[in-house]
Length: 405
Image (cartoon, rainbow, N blue to C red):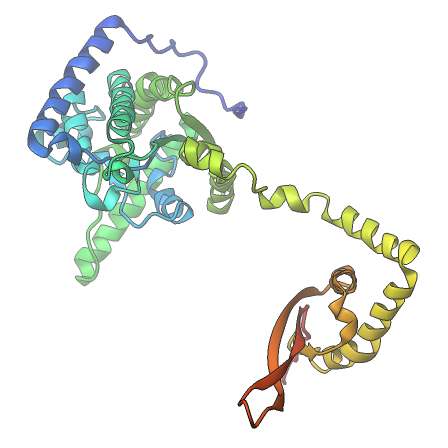
């Protein structure tokens, strides 16, 4: 996908490339964490989420603000995993207050254990991970393990717990000026809120970050993101589904940007075997793309190819159905039951539906077959029935609103 041309302070030095030492560090960290998980849970219980959405972005880009919206958009019911909230030890808090980050080993260990909780089985949103190159490599190793577990348990009764993993990298971006302004504004709003809670005794105190009151620390937080996290997230573009969200603008505009990026794509989310099974069923937008042209072609074909039958159908609609429809003009819905023999011809039935479609109605027709007793043989007790066809025509259209003074 193309990325909007939002400058990332081009005058600053480029972030360092991933080194062999960082890769080895990641492998050592991940291997030690994974080994403990296997010993503690057992391989058959290492059941990670089917979908993982990694939500990253500069300070003040709106990760916390938009998390609830993303959760609803993806149909998830579990709370997001906010990495900063996981790291609540005194040592971690001291580092965060200074605008720094916590060690990778602690982050990875806490995160993997949280992801194993049952409520995250269908999907999880991670706010603030990964932030370093080592964490990026640990993420790749985790997904590799997930694929390995899927192959290991494929075809077994446990296979439903080891589905094809889907990983989305979602980056909310604002430039340095906007980031610093939003951090300082958040600090003012938090302090005002907490003062009111203390004064009134109503409500809950909000976390008040020292970096939200010091422009220098706020700018430092942004540059830490730019120099470490941004480059780390960019390195995942070739590996996972990557979504760059321009977070400048109103909340509604940002939400619309998010929706565009998260449109459902079956080939990315379903298991390959499931995709193959469904390949003969076209998706709806493929069917409707030429629906109007096909409707015009069919109607003209009726007029020039079968004018007599077409005329009978139109006459039946005008004389028998429309008077009923007009009495339902306010509600916008009509149900007509008819035994009209004309509709026993499948072509006539198709004509009726097409005429209503062209006139702006949504028409559905179903056929009810009812056995009606016609003769009773007293000697044998045999009942002879005839089959009665009742066509139920359901019509929906834009009703008329009545305003009452």
